[in-house]
Image 1 (cartoon, rainbow, N blue to C red):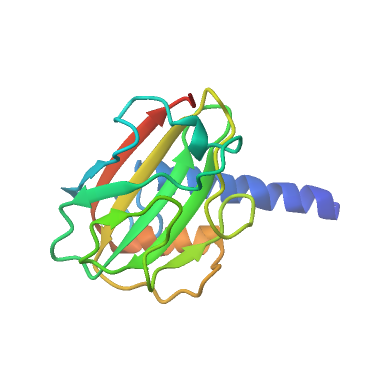
Image 2: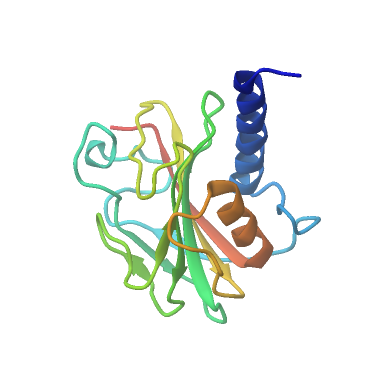
Length: 180
């Protein structure tokens, strides 16, 4: 029988693999093969796609999450946002927000839309976990969903990502390469 540490390590490895697959968009967890998805346009007034994430939105800053804007979610029943670091060194989810009203088209700086819920990040905390890796690749992905998710505030990461994957009908992404 393995030690508790080994078994915890194995569970973490499985969770990280599941997170990486769900966040990468390479597969749809729990939903079989990838589907053709509609495209959502995602932007931020604070940085361009492929540009560095402004320092204030990192773990050395104090601004919280950057503001986001999106379009292309018509027909959705809810919207979700996942922020992850897709760099090879660390595949980590920094934030999960779900059950955003489908008529909402922006996220305020350091804000969560009224009525939305947040799930756990990779570190087990609920809320925006500012990225720290200066050479990371941070993806701000907006998902249009065909249902409101039946999950509580603080839901476990793997469960939240699986539900998002199961209900995604459209997806768009804004990527910040590195931190200023």
